[in-house]
Length: 216
Image (cartoon, rainbow, N blue to C red; front, side, top):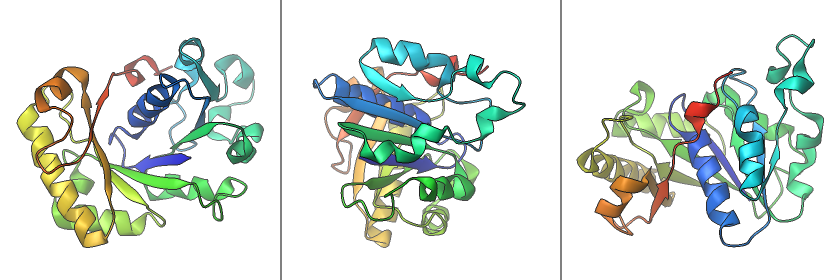
């Protein structure tokens, strides 16, 4: 069980989706849970059926279910509260920022489940996490964090050098925080250039972009 948190535009939702797909390709039963109640116009709803076709059980509102309820995308889908009790792997996409991280407390069992890992996705291109001191201060504000993900990118202008710079900074922050770095995540084309590990030895997870399809 893994929960992904992070600052706005850190890429946490993209990482969560790709992690779910990574596990599904191994033949595992995967539940991807949309717990982003911070940003109502940028959720998993528009790609819910696409992800289901790829073998993932997606727990998220569908847009047709929210009609007539105002900004109903902002409220927690009732069944998601017990998501940690579902059979199989559970991947949680949590809302961004410190306020988003608090959503985790709405899940039954989140504070006591020994198998749950809370991973903070860090992009050094974001102002709030743009330096080593900034990352350390930000992660400490989030509450429970069990590990970091280096998802440093510049959108379509991302280079291998920038990803590796992010790997070095995020790893230094992780050491200061006494946390592991779970992975460096990077678009598949660049991942092939980097190889199975980044410059400081963290595993590399290739990802594909799905979230540009999710604005509604």
